[in-house]
Length: 580
Image 1 (cartoon, helix red, strand yellow):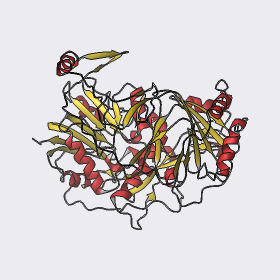
Image 2 (tube, one colour):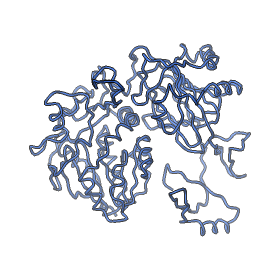
Image 3 (cartoon, rainbow, N blue to C red):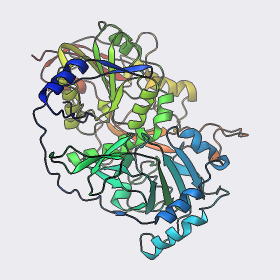
């Protein structure tokens, strides 16, 4: 069975019934609305059982069960008037998969911040005050919150992994769960995952490391695996008698969360590093010196950023690059394609005669793929849950340059090759240090000169779509572009620099700003006015020097180089699988 994929065990009373079910159901298609799914059955003689060790909660996280009474729960739920939406129109338009209401101040999902100068007409409801005063008395908070966000989740709904905005709110965050229970997953940058069951009427207190370092999210599904308890409700499905398990399935219902926060009046001056650093940040992060540091850097400056900017990022990723399209269109009908790091899925529909599946580390981008009708799932490029040698072709477009060490870049390339069938082809694109090649400037640099007449511009997003070739590109087809790769532009003081968009690179490891677009406000004339400033996020990149991609490929077994070229500011390589 593929790892990290959903499946179910079915137990039959006798071997004859099991054989009959297998004969009649295996390979059959079930119609689900306009789409169909195929049932795949297989036999297992037994299911191994391992007693799970108790996993401690993330540091700074406290869960208090039965924090409010059933009577208080009813009062709190009745206090939310879902019929009135005037004060939070923006939020309801921005969120498609849950109902949201704000009190005190509106949290703006387009820029991940609040407007401290525009309090909402409705403050925190009076029904919440006894709960908050109890939190003060018990020492869970030391100041009364002034902002409340109410989220209502129906069965099957969730929220992507995220860290609550660092610059907008003070340290401690309170989350009160009302209604049905759910499971919230906390993820550490080093890969650790802690699943926390949130019962109805429980209070979750987040501060310190659990607040700033761990992401938290709710996977969209209709059932959760939870520890079995003595008294089961009708919504719980227990195992067959005699089977050994301390887990059970819990059916989700409607859950309403009350999240209380305190607006930060001044810019944060603590030691944490927020995701939305400005270009003038005095202490940018350092280059990683170990695997844990690398995972932490990528979590903060790649994964969280793409989840935050997913919608705006997707709006700039609408035109597939011509040479990638040529590669995909050349594949035979029926070929199986894996797009590792698929983003919004712009390549998944290029060749409709292929069987294409994508994966991306950003659950927000994967959700956009699903909305566009593509098959995609959340996965890290270092561990893709697909069988070895299962794909006729794989592509990795603008992905590997986000890994912060050579070991991790090499591991990502080996994982891509692992998926290839013998004779299959892989196409890899990475951003090039050399934005001028064969005396031709890339479109990335040309756009800067054309639009700003030589003036330095810090507000343009670095968009790979704006670097894509138009017409013929400067390319070189050969087995080797350059022998004897010599790294240049290394960071000398151990700190990453913030790149000035649309200018030549002077280091290989850097942070590239992304200015989250808010759009022009009604009655606003000057797009550069102070009220239209955008939130700035920074993405980590390692730009590849000429010959570096070749050197990396030479360390991967089971492939041979078919062609290499430079394509509008990117180094690219086509590999063919040779593994038996």
